[in-house]
Image 1: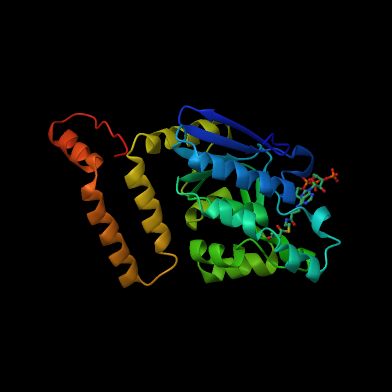
Image 2 (image 1 turned 60 degrees about the vertical axis):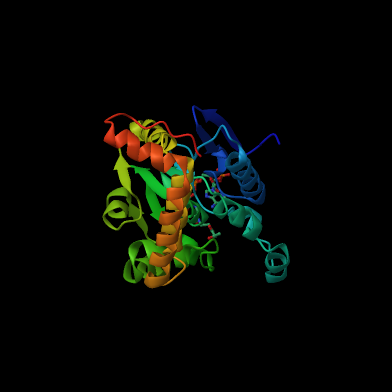
Length: 258
Ligand code: CAA
């Protein structure tokens, strides 16, 4: 599939997906989300890819769902199209880690897309917000649920009710992003982080992702039980033997995803 709204490339073991609708600050229209779902699904299946990075431009990661596309839609249109649901589910289904590299605006669906990734590294120019309230709607790609889990009820509620933006410093302080780096270093830093993950065993990386994500969906007791099962299961892999042998022999491990 040739993409019209994305630029994709594989650099080393990393699939770099750049949202590319510069005239609309990377607003998420149906075509972009459909292409993004396709690109993520293919990268997730591609043995040459170990980590996926989603980024935008310096000015905007994505300024939200496409308001022009949505403006004339009725309730019946949204409900019958099941607007955005299948494409966002495809992104959430990826087993490989996805890093959001956010510079500039990450608003509405853009903030929600970043939060669907496994973690966010932001540039010092990043601005996060859920300004849907200004349009007479609310977030529709998970923002009321995910932002609340990231930053807590009080701040999430304020952001959703006022539509105010959060800068990178506040986003880091609040736990929305894992790290803030200077804008000019963003991609280099994210690719270095992706490379570090790509060196690990893909089996333990997938297990770690699955177990951390499980903490969103279950009680502490059930989550710890889930983790324990996954932890025990990793002792059936050659990579566990290799990882521990390498530590004891004071050398770097050679993981083989087995
Ligand atoms: N949808 C469609 N087009 C958008 C857009 C969006 N979400 N955001 C920006 N654009 C377009 C603008 O219409 C403009 O296009 P034209 O040049 O053709 O007029 C172009 O991008 C540049 O935007 P601005 O001129 O507005 O740029 P700015 O620097 O003055 O302002 C901004 C930047 C503050 C991000 C402003 O564009 C803005 O407020 N955008 C809308 C943000 C928003 O409300 N997002 C939520 C959308 S709803 C949603 O996301 C629902 C959901 O949860 C799924």
